[in-house]
Amino acid sequence: MKIGVLGAGQLGRMLALAGYPLAKDFVFYDMSGNPSAGIGETIVDPEGTRLGDFLSQVDRVTYEFEHLPVEVASELEKHKPVHPCPRALEVCQNREAEKTLFGQLGIPTPKWQVADNAATLKAAAKSLGCPVVAKSITEGYDGKGQAVLRSPEEAEQAWQSIGHPRVIVEKFVDFRREVSIIAVRGEDGDVAFYPMAENTHHEGILRYSIAPAPDLQPHIQADAEGYIKALLNELNYVGVLTLELFETKDGLMANEMAPRVHNSGHWTIEGAMTSQFENHVRAVSGHPLGNVSARGLSCMINIIGEHGDIERILELPYAHLHLYNKGERPGRKLGHVNVLADSYEELVWRVKNCAEFLPGCPDFISSLTAKG
Ligand code: AMP
Image 1: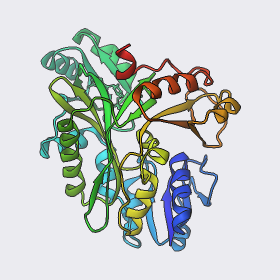
Image 2: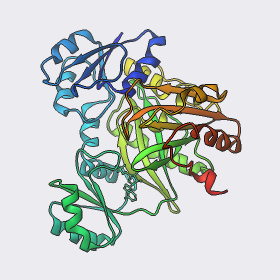
Image 3: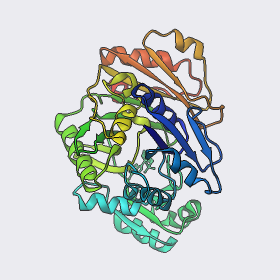
């Protein structure tokens, strides 16, 4: 079976790496002109004239990034199965549609309103109560196109800095930590949930994911599973779906979802019985889902901007290195290290040790380190 992947970045690369042992082949379709998957065949098509060529080579289509035109996915769907469905893409590309769907399914979110000029932004900030976060409705990711307003008076400046015709304004959440849940749904409707991860961001980019999230109360995992299951079933979804959430003292609030394998699930490559990548390939191909249990305790460390002392990391007996074969550039995701341990104490020690070889890696701050 040949799987066509829209997008050709590191997520596509890792999908292919997981799919080859299952005898899958991959063809990537890249509209950015800058593919980095470096594996399988890649059709580079910034003009969008070679879709027919792509289609003729593949049996099924999936995607590894969500910022591609929905029309492309809908057109492809007329000819070949496309998993997940284009509606999932449509919802994820628009924060207003996404938060509306969450509300319809009873998934809690921060209180929100929409604004389409500086005056309505100011009014929204007043009525929600500052601080609030304003985010462009479309095209935002990794904290880009966002501004925090500490008072309604900052509306004009925030509006200018975002530079987008429509924004969503959210009440700022006083969260304990950021967490995510990754689930997979098969063609037959079977659903499996990975243990949740605790995620630490720095300058808007994910740096560390610990899984299973330490000290997670079982009802929190159960709530998250209920929310993501509602989304999977509503969208008649096939493949891996990620839901990012805030954990507060009153429970969970959803932030956003991603219709794909996710950076906060990279720990599953060695840390789970079946990785998120293999399970996505299984689902998209119509196979049964694999076991999603954790093998132990894991922490994923992202390698951002510079590679650091790769040779020293390779010497660590508990570290698994994954490089994406990309050039160094500030803020760019170049790879990740999965660190495994039998106890959280050991995990902290190992992660700190490993992070020393990664220049620019922020201190390991998490619920584990906060306890001292
Ligand atoms: P997003 O692009 O929506 O994932 O936001 C990027 C980051 O901004 C999140 O990972 C949070 O750290 C922070 N953030 C986003 N929305 C809120 C919110 N309503 N309250 C507090 N922090 C937020």
